[in-house]
Image (cartoon, rainbow, N blue to C red; front, side, top):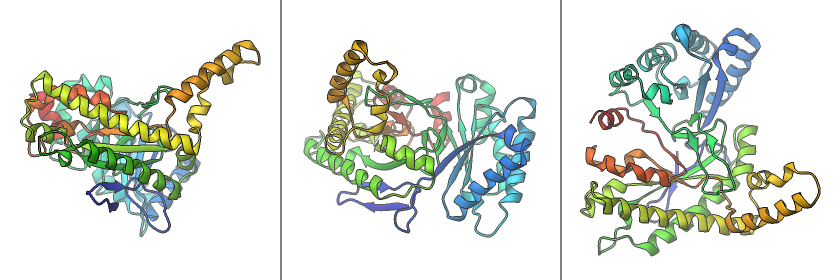
Length: 383
């Protein structure tokens, strides 16, 4: 759900967690080994219990299936989907809110989509593309067959990076349902979005004061949302306390370039947009540092202290001094902040191949949002 809109149209998407009696957009990202689930009745019963409880409360779930591949990939997926359909065949189970997430090219995407639809009915299929799949012409052919399926998503980004240099990257092995954030399983996110063209001033530049004020207000608002939410699983509750993840999505870079008459093929355009993104990132980090100064050190940063692995003595004391200097300089109040979608680089009206030259700007984000539509991906790749 959209929880509300700010005075300037800033949408805040609250995650699928309980805040008073309301549920909101987002959900639970779970992972399970398909071979173990099919071989063990107790594990299957436990899984269906989790799914039934979440879906019965209208919490969307993304179920990542690992351990699937080889000649038996199709039959394994079909067997699990049919068993899930039977186990969840109850009033209020809302199986359309169950998203199936797969890695790589096995089963083939179009085959997986047929199995998901025939066994579980309406609902989403997410494909996380690995390096091997990306190099396979057959994989792209299978995706082409699904080009007009809006309920099939494809994600490509392998890691979630933090803007805090004291925190290591994490493997983005799953998709948070509905919000399509590619992230580790059972992580807790509060998300929002801003559209860059809204901040164009009379001179065709960016109204920096307006942008800075809204970004600061947004970080403060999302921080409050984090405090209000009762997360639906213990793992998400722990992750929320440990990492205080924000996903602030900046949309409309391609629209901004088009409206300002910037040529996407020119290096100056990339530099101009990079300057804006640097400014956005600086404001977000500044606000996050301010919150860290008032609420205390983010637990994840405290646990990443390398001196914790050393015994007492002069070496540890030296490392402690270095660590606290680094913390004072670089600590943030949130593990994640800025999100970019590849399609924010393209004008919203169409996919113009010239805007592919803006792709290097994606490196400015901690992680990316995959597309919920396959056709633009295929058009961009095939051009």
